[in-house]
Length: 302
Image 1 (cartoon, rainbow, N blue to C red):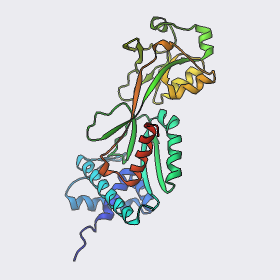
Image 2 (image 1 turned 60 degrees about the vertical axis):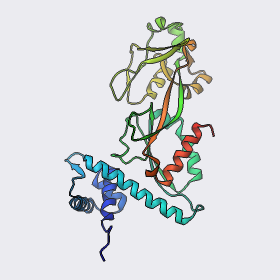
Image 3 (image 1 turned 120 degrees about the horizontal axis):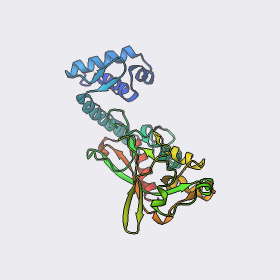
Image 4 (image 1 turned 180 degrees about the horizontal axis):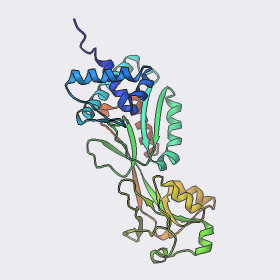
């Protein structure tokens, strides 16, 4: 009797190549060679009668069929992991790997405390944290979870709001002593502003305020434009270069220490949401679900 799933090693090879971005990196994780993985992927494509990867001299990419197959195989392997854990019993230590992508704001100011809690509860789980302001493709790049600013439009993914983060306008005491303190938006237009260039659009992010019951969007005139790392606007503001808008969880400690001063506090009140996104629950490993619970419970204040 022939084995029904004697090709699963080839599937693991395919998944390793995609998740690590190259045959060489995938081979390193599986303790083999790039040529062995290349042959495994070719065998798998031949068996399926479909091309899974687009290969160029510079990069690898998934075909649409490859994207679908990767998602289905990750779900299947997740079910195998879950079945083994169920057999081991509820007292068994959780193990495995979770790949998480987060923006610099959350990666530096929110996640460290939460990941410390998770690591203490599940020391055998390996968390691969990717800190970037680029919106990663969860399936194509092999991520289990991602934290993003806003609520993603992709309805095939689950989105859980982690928080509505309040915004504050700030400047250094030195800057305000030299340039004066603006008391209206019209006065703010005469000041050095430090806006951020949004990665997806290449446009400056508007500053948002609440004037009484009215929501206001205001486009700052840039003295220095910051791109890629939004934390750069706060660093520049601290050095007295200008005024920036950032999240309360980033600037509140600096304000308490006197390194920054809030500007136009009467116009505060606007927030921006941070969301945790992932594929539907049935496709998540036990380790990923445990991390989801830690992140979401923190959002609930637990």
